[in-house]
Length: 105
Image (tube, rainbow, N blue to C red; front, top):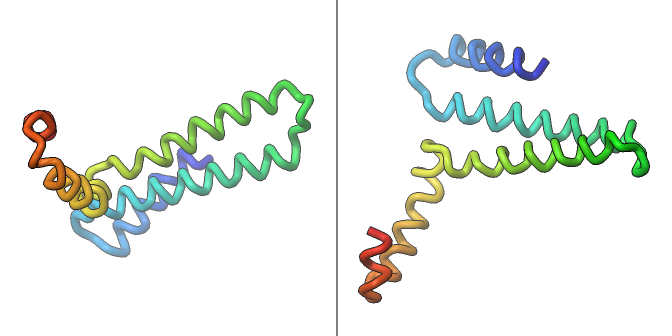
């Protein structure tokens, strides 16, 4: 259901705001993954008992989706806007150490 909804939402938003917008794709994917994690967590809380074997499977899936959710920070539009400047500052802070300077460049 969300696999079908993600391209539809992106298509509608691209129709509303045409042109190449790389943040739009990332924002839609980020939003849909957040919705899927919230829906899965709510379903787990409502339907799974702690003794139920499917609860472990659902918990594993929630962990997997949360990890992929965190990897959005390393995708290109967000990485260059948010984390890129931080990493450049961190790299400049270690420039005075010769070994670290050669590793980080």
